[in-house]
Amino acid sequence: MTTFASFVSSVGSIETPGVMRRYDHEPESLGEGDLPAQFPRLPDGSIGYAPADCPEIEETRAIELVFCIRPVGLGTAAENFAETIEMLDYANAALRTWKFATAQNGMAITYELSTAGSAPVIVGDTAYWAVIATITARG
Image 1 (cartoon, rainbow, N blue to C red):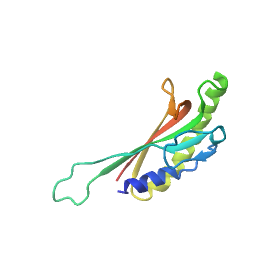
Image 2: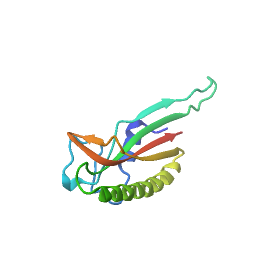
Image 3: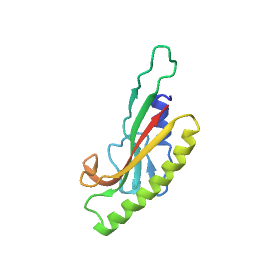
Image 4: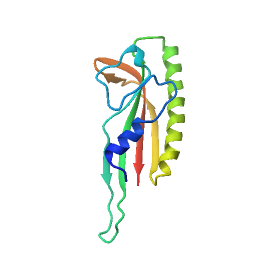
């Protein structure tokens, strides 16, 4: 299994169409010219049970990759809906490509995509329309 630092770096390097700025950590604020922006949140991990005579222990790494689209309250409902759907498609395409490349390194990758919905992503003092990818690696 990869280290946390390598996992975060790998997730942070995902190139997503439509994203104007990629951060390697959660930013303190976002400027209008940075949007859409993507950034990883801090990861989680676990180690599975293995008998004492088994040298292989399954480890898990999980992380959220956030795609902020635009501040809540800007644009029309139809525009925000359309841009969120578009970002779901972009994120899905980028994650599928990354998942295949990463799986070649012996890790089983799964991911789920969700929208911020009724609980928008907050960066600094601003709430954003967003897509959140929850990525889990096992190996």
